[in-house]
Image (cartoon, rainbow over all chains, first blue to last red; front, side, top):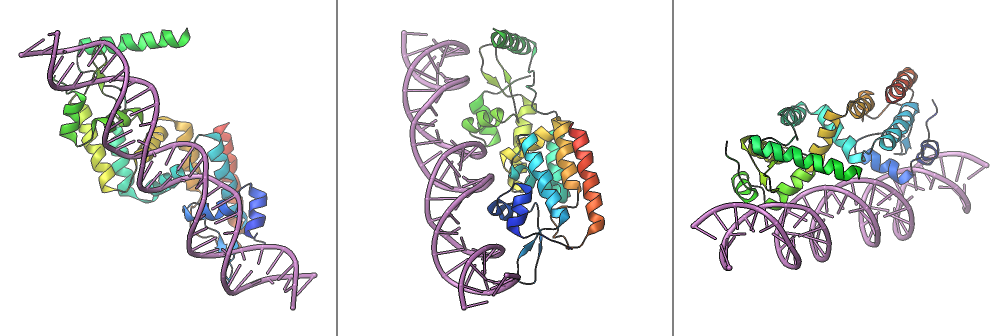
Length: 117
Length: 117
DNA sequence: CGAACCTTAACACGTTCGTGGTAGGGTTAA
DNA sequence: TTAACCCTACCACGAACGTGTTAAGGTTCG
């Protein structure tokens, strides 16, 4: 049952001890504690820390983004509210009438051309 | 179908014109545009703005949180990566000798990598 | 034409996030 | 016992978020 102290866990995961405490405070990875209060990182916690770091690196995602996702996952009311809002035909510009839609498309076309040039 | 200018939309939704532009920049509510580039808020956009305001008020959620949720909703790779990470039994303090957990976590990790690759 | 809108770009400022550091004090182990 | 850890609680500081304001210039309409 070997568990690592915070400095050891930091070494093997690439986080700093300071950030390990911060990640815990954000509610993302909470290690076990010894009788005297020392953090004890077991294999599962280490794995979570590594995959978390990978997640942040591969996508442009912040810790607070992941914390929010965790909140959504554990709070059905919040999740339903957010997903309900998103489900209602999202960020695409609405077309209000034919002429406006046309000008929007033309504008988009011009911007595309400009971007290419 | 009538559409409101940005100041009119601001009045009827409770946002400021400045924030309406900011919300658009965040990718959350993009109004139509007139031929000369004026924002035109139709009924759907106004409704989205009102429900968005309600969402931010009822839960302690930031605009960037909702923007991130939108990103997850529209990017399956991101969504799968985040939800995959969260699925591995999250912030509960682990009890130290959990060897059976380990293999589960490793399996999870491999699946994550495979999904991303 | 002129007032009252609209546009984007920029400056400003308080707040939160991410991160490192330090201080004061307990724990562990040679 | 003493060095080397650990803890919490702060201070600091740059970057990003949220928001207002202002500047410079087009658009609309009486």
